[in-house]
Amino acid sequence: MDKLTSPRRIEQLLKKYDFRMVKRFGQNFLIDENIVLKIIKAAGITKEDTVLEIGPGIGTMTQYLCEQAGHVLSVEIDKKLIPILKETMKGHDNFTLVNEDIMKIDLNQYIGELPKDRFKVVANLPYYITTPIIMGLLEKDLPVESITVMIQKEVAERIAASPGGKDYGALTVACGFYTEPKISFIVPANVFMPRPKVDSAVVHMKVREAVSMGEKDKKLFFSVVKASFANRRKTLLNTLSTNLDYDKETIRKALNNAGIDEIRRGETLSMDEFKKLAEEFKKFEPQ
Image (tube, rainbow, N blue to C red; front, side, top):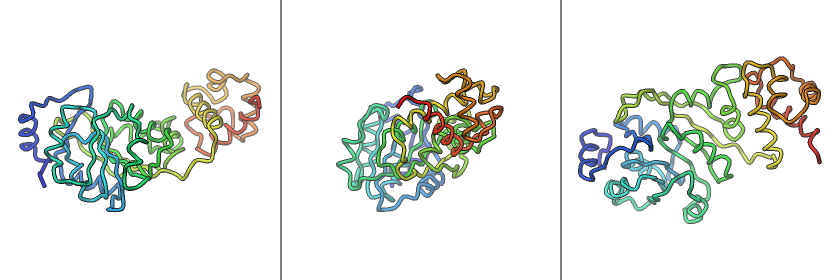
């Protein structure tokens, strides 16, 4: 296997194909084989799995994924990386490469062609678009089994936070609604080329069984969550009054019926409390 974690080999490839980093794509290449192996282990990849990899880069992790998984579908936005990937992934028959933007691609058209319906997501995500990618995968009702991604440490801490802490917010609740997230390990900045300014973390999110909530109810739930965190210094009664289309008395009644003190703040509410509160607001919605 071509050792793509070698800085010298990376430089050779980039020079051969006259490749230059594109800042807007947030490109950083891993130069530590141990980290690659730890990510794959955290994802629990076996020959029974089909893997969706987002942003394969030059194929550093892709090669190892192909060794461990049944099939790997890699989506790469940068067309200048395609010839490099065709070289580094040569000989891997269980590999499919798609030159598309993960935010615009219709994954369903590729899923039908894959060996298995359900798939696991593994990726080293660019910092600037981490949240839209994760939420896009979760909200599109795709047959995703788990998501294991390397992201900015600060964002990972927000995703896996507990109620009451400064990191706990709307992103925490959204990810917790769809998945069971946990931080697998921290990744220091010095294992990347070029070196980013902050450390990263690998977060593993096991997707929950189908959420039994209709689209209308889901929309109400997330509007309540978003409103609860809109003004973190305000009490729930005040921030909900400012950010939801209900009068103050209705909000007070909903909080009281849900058993939630109106002077609490959004960051203290658990997932179950948010669900209870949304259920109470549903009673005031026109049928």
